[in-house]
Image 1: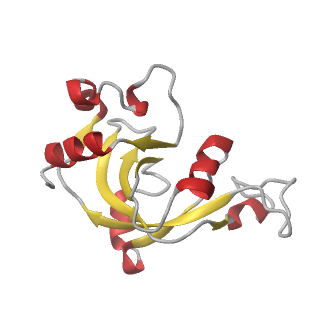
Image 2: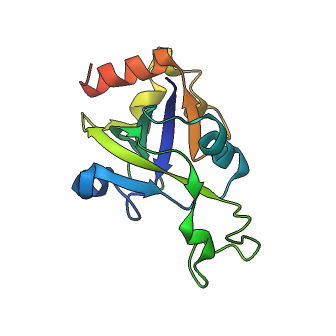
Length: 154
C-alpha cells in the first residue's frame, strides 16, 4: 500500500463535495502535469491512502483522508472542446491524460499548511519542499501516520 497527497482547489472540488457525492466518490480530473499523471497511471493502486489537500485557497491544508477507488482511465475532460481542461492533441484512441476515482474515508481536524511546516517529522515531505508545486506527490508511511495523528484520525 502506498500513500499520496492530492491537491484540489476547494472551489472546484472540496473534500465536502466528495463526502456529499454518491458513494463518497469522485473522478480526479484535470491533472495536466506529466509526473503527476505518471503517478496515477503507473503507481497508484486501488486502496492506496490519500491526504486530500485544499490548495489555492485562503488557508491551504489537509482537509480529509481518502483512498484510491479505481484504476487509471482516460480523463474525459481532455476531450471537452472549449472546456478548461481540453487538450487538442488528445484523442480517444490515444488519450494523454488520465483520472482515478477517489473515495472519501474520514474528515478529521483541518491541518493548515503552516501547522504542517512546524512539525519536525514532516520536514522531508514533498509538499513542504521549496519550489514543490506537484498536484500529486508520494507520502511516506511515517508522514501518513503523523498526519493521521495530528488530524485525530489514528
